Image 1 (cartoon, one colour):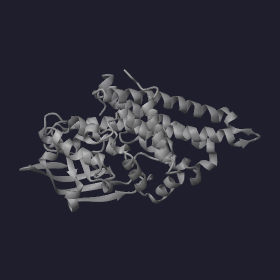
Image 2 (cartoon, helix red, strand yellow):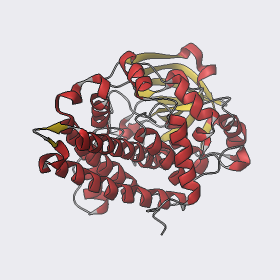
Image 3 (tube, helix red, strand yellow):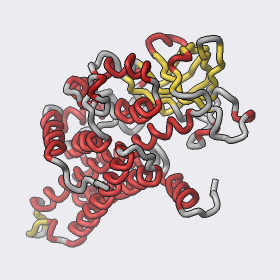
Image 4 (cartoon, one colour):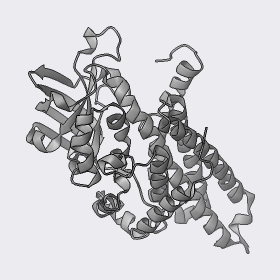
Length: 388
């Protein structure tokens, strides 16, 4: 199996082109967006216009015809530049569900318009306030009414709602109490947010990073049955395709951050002189950075393996989750090593370490908590008793 330990010439070209685009959005741009908790609209527009957000859409629908590995390169390059792919990445990982399980009519209707940047699919509605990580316990319900579903309920941690034309929504079409298997009775709907209008209310949640996330409230939202992905009640399996791609792409972003920390800190350690010598000569500075760098490369290999498996048509649950787990741990180690290297300057906004440090903490708990990944590996992979 090709694990992409080395990039192809085409992938190197992608990496360089994305890095060139990111050079137009320097540290100051991201620092200002962060200070205002403001969505980086100009950056997302530039990504979309360059075609990077449609890389996973097949060429027959007007997209780039790329692979999950290609998308990983794009997002890693963004974060390694000091920026963030989070404000735009959902338009990539939602393709895991739409491309693998959507109907030909849905693809013909939506994908060319997404590829041409006429519409955006940036919202992913799964988590609910009372269910948390227990996805099967969601209560948002879609009742069938002729050729439409009528949706009522709520979602939380739904980012980019204000910047999306469509949302991929997981809801129940059979209540939890009425199913034999708890993963049954879940369906995936493509919600046209423009048509929904005021039937969806939102409350923005201010967080420690400029993530622009929200709590949503659905009141009699009407969605055509033709906008349902796949069979009714089988949506849990469909949403896993999107989640596996999400894990791979988030791991790639996180790796970009980790390498950014090591790049910045090692450069600073070579130049910063204290007690008459560069601080990089001190093993207390040098070794944590070297350790984090090795860990990042190990996590990267698992990420490539997960991407290769998905691109070959498989569902790499273990590999995708492991990539996210290992990338987040390695990057958190790199973040702490960088903070120690910069010392007092690490908490000064102008050096950007504190901004990225805050961003590096989130992947330990989102989009899935690392403890849940460990529980999944322990039960599903190692066959030990289920802990939850």
